[in-house]
Image 1: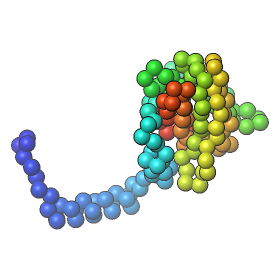
Image 2: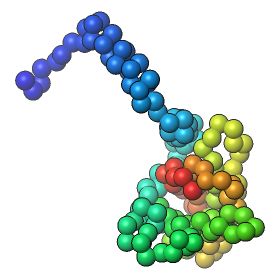
Image 3: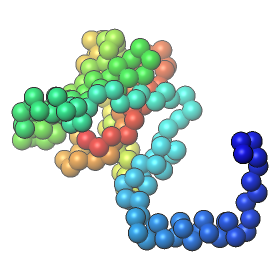
Image 4: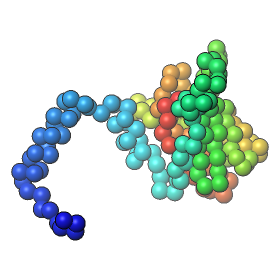
Length: 162
């Protein structure tokens, strides 16, 4: 019956609590998923626009088959007219994020790890051609890229494991 309001009883609430308890024991949320969810609320600011994941070479079947095993991972985020293209470059000297803003423009950037023990962010700037380079943690981590454009617009990437 569409439009009918169903009142939740004490018995319904108790059943939901029990079900939640069973699910927590049988299929608990992974700790990094919980941290990422908390990070979405604690790090995001009201003025930041979320840049959605548009492409990930790790997930795109054709690209994953075509690139070599040692090839870099390429990820693209989009927010309105702004595209943030990044490549994870694993080198013997360390991992780094090589990136490009499209359209090309100068901007301030941050790479932030989404873990409770992380302190601060790694910062850099994109040059007038939109190019930037960020050192990365040695291990794969859940991160976000934050871009502050010259006009004050703030764009944050979706959280991603890089």
